[in-house]
Image (cartoon, helix red, strand yellow):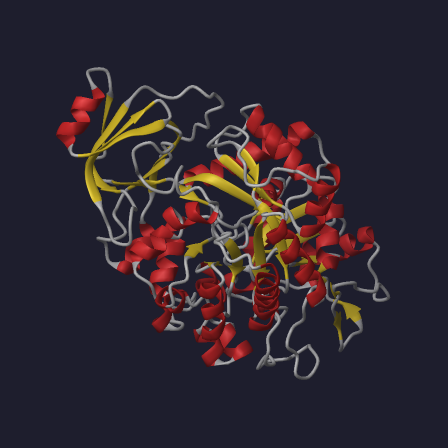
Amino acid sequence: MISVAATALAAPATLYYNGDILTMEGDSPKYVEAVLVKDDKIAFVGDMKGALVEAGTNATMYDLKGHTLLPGFIDTWGHFALIAQDTFGVNVAYFSKNSPKTKQQLIDKLRKESIVFNGWIVGTGYSDAQLSDGAITLAELDNAFPKTPVLIENISTLTGMVNSAGLKKLGITTKTKAVNGFIPVDLSTGKLTGDLIGMPYLNAVAKAVGKYSQDLTFESYRKAEKLYVSNGFTTAQSYEATLGDIRNMRLAIDRGIVSVDLIALPTFDIVDELLKTNPNYQFGVYSKGDRGFKVAGIQVPTDGAPQLRLAYFTKPYLDTTGFAKDWRGFAYYPQSLINKYVKLAYEKNIQYFGYSNGDAGIDMTLAAIDKVVKETGISDDRRTVIAHSFFARDDQLESYKKNNIMAVMMPNGTWLYGDIYPKALGVERANNLSPLKSAQTKGVVTALHNDTPSSGPNVLFSIWSAVNRQTASGNTLGPEQRIDPYLAMKGFTSNAAYQYKEEGKKGTITAGKVADLVEIDQNPLKVDPMNIKDIGVVQTIKAGVPLYTK
């Protein structure tokens, strides 16, 4: 049963005991016998005798029954608003209920579960690799849906497919010029394939979904929150947040519609608008003291997804089929723009979140940071982040360390696309995907993310991926970059809190911190590493209030 609290009232004092209570304090595992929660805070952490004395006579005794208690999981890079929007469509992703394994199952799921929204049927989380009989074609989609516009959103969130009825409704023809993306044409027939990549796809999503009421927005937020809390999250993030997202997320918190903490991360153009309205706009400050809603900082992307060969590399892709000879991907923006916004962030003390995938994209972010540090002399720890950091080289990781830059990586990418990268990039570069071990060795602080809905929301699956580095086919990609389960768990707890400058408020089970907790049915440090992905969330507690109980 899921129950999302819409009240600020905390539960009575509760004493948790008889389980593996893992505080996540420090660089090695630390266990305690008991944790006492009073009102919305952690009141005591330690031995059972001391907890009973502190609890008094009225506390609720919660027997963990051998389960493991951890700090609530923190989303370091995700799409809360997009997950909410996706609830208007049909989830066909690998993490959906009864996920399709064939093209016919995909079509049947779209027919059975779809509700025509704004004149469209929308499927979300699609992946070719998920289907045993290959990618669905435009002809097959047209045959199944000859009249109703259909949009199938790829799990990458950067590409998708529409049927012919959809192409007609969008006004896309073979003569339509693609801006910042591609509208592929079948070279053998001269006809559209139905695929849309980059901005043409994003524009199609915007037109298909359209505008909807605030009440409907809030209802979608409630559904998104259920997904988060059922996976142990007590803090959610929405990057690429628009002005509308910022307004609606703040209202959702103020009105008690959403109970988890919500963090917005707008791109540089939205930050310009915020500063134009209020030059002293408060970044990184929660609306309710130590919780609620906040705008974390400024997000500046350099390049796109490597599995789509849009990431920007210093050396060409090994497989350039469909692209120009010596294709290296491309940069979204010129170096001057990256420089401009790094300087703005450092001068105004706004936390900077770079978003870089290929090593040339990472070079752009690092060059801008190094330039501003040298020019301004600002060298203190700003919790600067480079999200994804998919193919960071060793010399780049040394720059991360030198300039206090966090690497926030997506281990699920190994499982999702690990079978693609050796062919696309060559074995050596592919093995260096998400180089968490190298980052740890060089002293770079790391955190982990799912980038949901670009991968599943299951934290334990991501931890499993970081520990095992297994691909979907069962191969192991770059075993030298495996990390131990404890460091992986820090990526969603203590290090994740550190990313947001919240290490004094959450991220560990420590007296005085907000009582954000998650109970899971096994200890990731004590099971076979290959079984970590099978661990389930039993209960999620936000500020002392259970939001989810299995």
